[in-house]
Image (tube, rainbow, N blue to C red; front, side):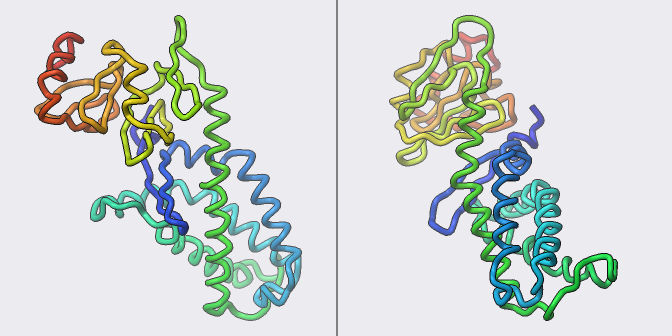
Length: 277
């Protein structure tokens, strides 16, 4: 897996919930059939809406055209846009990135860009009505924000459920762990992190969150499966690459902290596993 695919996002929604996902999950989400179906329905609703709500696009055909083109451009741009914004945000701040900050400028930019179509293509594109004013930008921002929130709160979990059902287990008799009523193939789990009342489980290119405690997980695994380096961290045997000081270097390039009290046991585990320590 490419390192970029496993890059994690922590997005803060308007309701205060933090949604975690990887670059690969974002890319698969915008390409997924559910998102496409949801956007088609949303475009039809916008096209059939009361014209007084869209004074700059008074005709049904113009709303369908300009919103349709803007949505298409959004789907093409958003994986690259989100990656760049996330990198810039995490360089200076270690708190979740608010969704409105992440994508608001893109939505406003696409709104401005769409106003240039008649200047470039003339009569080849539907005519627009009144010029955009600040309330139009605010309305577009609100509509886009609602659509994005639905995608992250409802469509992303559905996509993960599909992936869980389709996930194949390597050769041999499969082993599973049960978290919050969900069974997960143990061989697919790379790292587990405890965050308040949840466990953040990273598998091959996917990050999932389950309402469970670390002890609910570690009681189902053995030393052959991996090692708990900290009260809040566990790393699998296949993912642990090297013990360097009080940090475990992983194959994915992440650093897993090792607590002072667990360091001797972790060092012994690396020695027994024949890994650098």
